[in-house]
Image (tube, rainbow, N blue to C red; front, side, top):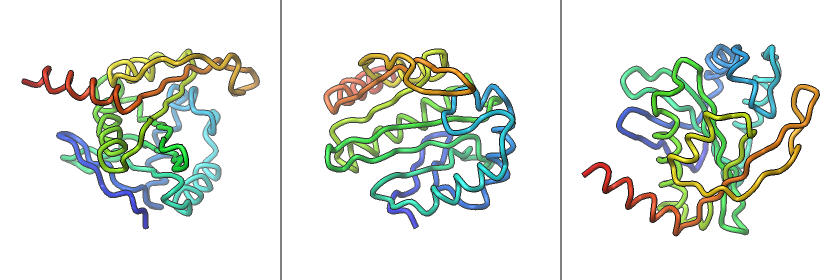
Length: 190
């Protein structure tokens, strides 16, 4: 069982992934638009690969990583996955996320990611949260910008995917950036 607890937002519940989530993950990752920017899955999706990935995730040590199913609060439907890969020595984590295409552009990922950022800084007491995405992934770029991440650079041809090398944008959020983003969000909600 993960030491990482369930996280909640106004519209979402982030709960630890379960083996029973495999079918739903396979379902929404069956769309090319969803898998095109994921480094570890190709298109068409290989169901055995997804099941093996989930088995590895569930067997991972919680001090190394946390994976949550992003679910709708009202229905419990799994709409995406969010992860934190820990680097406890350096007091930081790398965030990753993806969701079913039908939920893009509705603010769900920004909401889920912000809750994971709060958890990282307020409860895990980390100093830094990192995020990377392929430069072509404009959806992840918008989420990173809304959250208050700072662009730190680009790994030119940093990842190999579908037979070619892809540029990868690098973001970081320090505790000071988090405090600034939190104040900004509080002002916007008042």
